[in-house]
Image 1 (cartoon, helix red, strand yellow):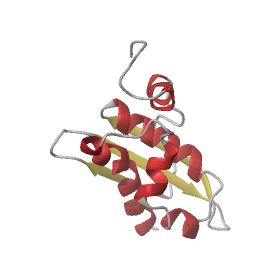
Image 2 (cartoon, one colour):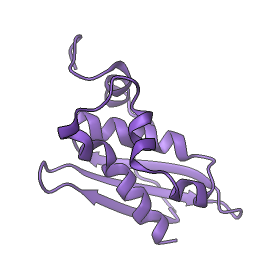
Image 3 (cartoon, one colour):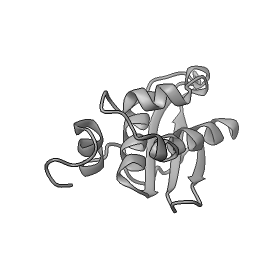
Length: 125
């Protein structure tokens, strides 16, 4: 992404260097989110410890910069969080992780797709 990119530095940094990217062997739950309108696809995997805390979270994606950055930020955020607390995260929480630059209204779905995958994964546990 070139300097002067249309998104803020947080999005650019997490797109360029996504955290927690890659498969997660022995995941407790895996779920995928797909946006058929733009083609974004993100898969989120979680490992829960005996105390129902998320001990690991990883993702893979074939998606735009906003979606990849959102997945990177979300997986960082939920590590160490209880399943119950993670289940309470809402769209506003996911968008707040993206930083003060904000996400254009037309791209909001891209930013919340990883949250949708997280909710699906938690429902499978």
